[in-house]
Image (cartoon, rainbow, N blue to C red):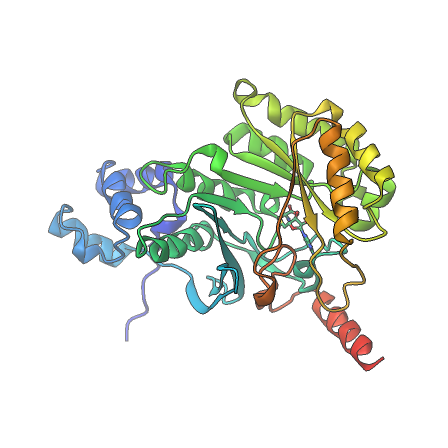
Length: 368
Ligand code: SAH
């Protein structure tokens, strides 16, 4: 048997990279556009079926390129209509993708890494440890798979949020090529406002993002001061709130002030949910043109946190609204299938020791 030759997965390339690929390989730049239409508009994965490409080029493609997607391992549908897929990505690990249908919108929450290195104290993904970055194909493939399923019902993915497993700004190269494809008319053609990159506060990544794209930015803030944020979001020790606010202002100043920013704030009972915190938050955000998304904490085993009561959540929200902020309360979706914010765990062959330590803690708590 001959060894298979290395092939390029065309889902790893954005439009400009595809143009370079075709220009250097077959001196036909426009092939990139043809192939994109086949791969994304018609969702055709077989080169043999691409009838407007010459026979010789089809044969060449079959030898040198592929269109490989993550493999769907499981698919679960929640009582509320939320769908969660577990997909196996190129490095053999599994990540989760969640589709949230809501009033005519289909928002897809995609993962960007296998696990996460940041270990925010209240997030289940961090407890799984980490096993590498997703490729562009792994990321855009999640959109492709959801889109195929929706098209069968005459619908489409209308919004993409990079709020699944992982920290997108620590996998910036792959994420940027994927967001290019999400917003490219030859691929998914979503408007930049409908693609959101969410970060726990990787400040240099925000400046890099600002150089390359105009997609919407979400900041997982969760605390109005450094003392508290250091505990909840450890990367705050490296990039404290003042630096993060400055990076946000920089991002917002691009595109003639037309970029959008959302501040995410997960409410944890007795931790960050008092009116004093709301007041401090309102003051902190005065300098930023942003809206606020409140997320009631979603529990997972041995998390050590609780969701505040409805009354406390409403009071927190009302304070911010009265202070002049557009403040949305994110309704919890897909909780029965472990698909809510902060519940995504996938199947991570952990390279750190974190998963082991977490599981020991869960066991100890169950035994107690
Ligand atoms: N690493 C990026 C992308 C993940 S987004 C980021 O931090 O922004 C996932 C969102 O859900 C983040 O805002 C995260 O802070 C929030 N989250 C994490 N765990 C949660 C939990 N248990 N309950 C509610 N929200 C949670």
